[in-house]
Length: 270
Image (tube, rainbow, N blue to C red; front, side, top):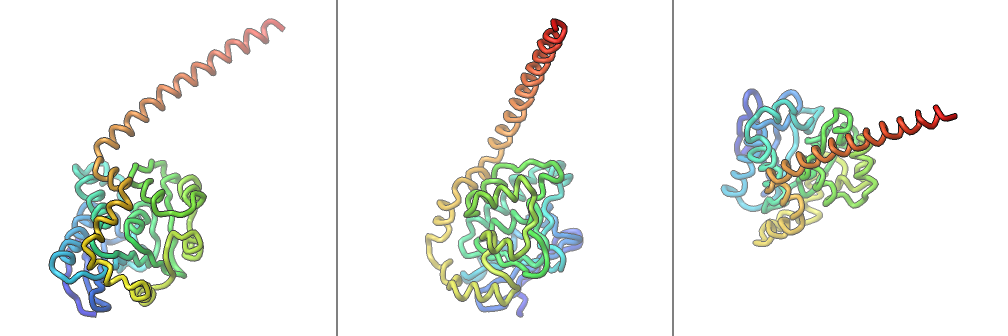
């Protein structure tokens, strides 16, 4: 495969763009140890998408990992919390770019895709998963993190079965490739050959030639796009919810204390 360009991911990674087939652009990212969605990763992938759109003929973009075990292990929560502009300028900017990209995108999931890594795959149009290695999992439940609005809405808009979403969020279920295909989380099993088969079978290379391809996506996914674009409103809403939850919890504790006094008085009368 011919290499078109390569972009560094500081401090020790890279994204390499190759062409396994004419007008199919394979972006292989390597950001040790597990392709965390840090600022440099997001910004390098954004640049790669820009280069393909503006410097090359329309076709199909495929992303995959050069790290055998992981497609992506998601966010680095400490980095996300302590890096100014991370959410709206890096992570959400990348997700919005993928969701509205003016040509088809395919996530070739070679290994584990956990939490934000699975979200990254969901922001693509299609997904092909390694049939023998790796799980798909939203494991926020296990480390006590909330799902921010665009994180939740992308699954609501793309998963056909509410019970699948429930298993993902409230059980942190780990989906094998076979389970993921059955639940329509992915579109097929295999590697690059199978991704190319999907592209050719669905004639995806021609789809991005339409002037309406981007706008069709923008209408399809307007709920998620709205959350991505209105990041600060969503953060204020989350803060309001947390405040109301604390008020509600105090009211509930007051009811318990009242019940305890009544119960004690009743026992004293017996």
